[in-house]
Length: 340
Ligand code: NAD
Ligand code: ZN
Ligand code: ZN
Image 1: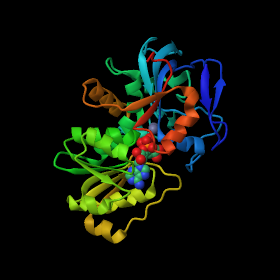
Image 2 (image 1 turned 90 degrees about the vertical axis):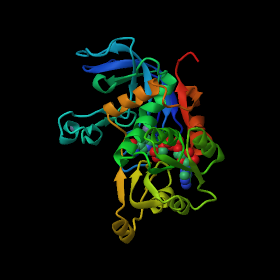
Image 3 (image 1 turned 45 degrees about the horizontal axis):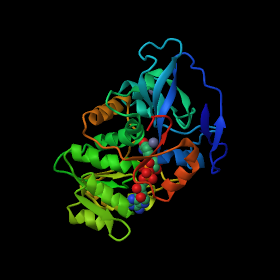
C-alpha cells in the first residue's frame, strides 16, 4: 500500500510503499476511500506545537473508508462497513474526563495521524471503538471533512452555547469555517463571517452568512460592535491577530472560543475589559464520538453542504502549498478510490 510519510519536520512528505498493516486485538484495517487535509496535518508535518509527533509518521485524521479486516475481539463492526477515523484515535474510557462525557480531554488519548499513523495512505489501522460508522447517504468525500472540520466546529458552537437571536462571529472561512457558518445558522444565530480572501467571503455568503467582514480592509472589532458585538466568536484563522480582533468585537458577556492552533500562538487578554465586560475565553478541542454521530446525522438529513476539491495522494505536497497560500475554496480531500 502507498502512504504519504513525514520523514522530517518541514521537509516534503514522501510517498512510500509499505506492507498492509495487520490489525491487532481491538483494531480494524480500513481501505481508505477519502482523506481530508486539515490544517492540523500541516502543523504536524512542520512540528509547530509544543507536543510533537515523532517522524516518520503518516498524518491524516479525516480518513474514511471500508473495513476490510477485523482484529481479535471486534464484534460491533463488520467487513464492508464504511467508517471514519477522527483525531480522537482512542481514549482510556476510565478517567474523569472519559466518564463525564469529555473523552476529548482524556490524558491518555492517542491522536490519529499524530500519535499513530493516520489517513494519508491507502490503508490504515484504527481502534474499532473509535472508528465511527458513516450513515448511508453520506459519501466518503463528504464524510472526510465532517470527521474533523465538521465535528470540531459543531462542538465549539455547543461549548459557546450558541442559540437563536445571537450574533456569532466565525473568524476564518476555511475547512473548519465553512462548516461553522452552517452549524451556526442551524442553531438559529445571525452569522458574521470574517476572512481575508474574496473567494472565502463569497463562499460564506453562499452558505448563509448574514454579514461578511474583510479583515484586510475592515476593522473587525468595530464592525462586530456596529452590530452590537458578538455573543460568541469562533477563532478558526491561523493567526493570533485574528484572535485579538474577534475578542475585541465581543459584546458584554460574550465568549471567545479558541480553536485554531497557530505555531507559538499567544493572545494578550486585557484584564480590565475582560472583568468589566464579563467575557470568557474558552479552548475547544475536536468533539466526542457522540458529536461526530450528530454531525453525520445532520448531513444525512441534508442540512449541511461540504465544499471540497479532490486531489490524488501523490499531489500531497502541492496540496499543502495550496492550503498555505489560501487558494483552496474550503477543504482538499485526497481521493483514494471513490471512483469519482
Ligand atoms: P484553513 O487553512 O482551511 O482555514 C483557515 C482560514 O483562515 C482560511 O480561509 C484563511 O483565508 C483564513 N484567514 C487567514 N488569516 C485570517 C485573518 N487574519 N482573519 C480571518 N481569516 C483569516 O484551516 P482549517 O483546516 O480550517 O484549520 C484552522 C485551524 O484550526 C488550524 O490551526 C488547525 O490546526 C486548527 N484546528 C483545531 C482543531 C481543534 O480541535 N481545536 C481541530 C481542527 C483544526
Ligand atoms: Zn480517559
Ligand atoms: Zn483536523
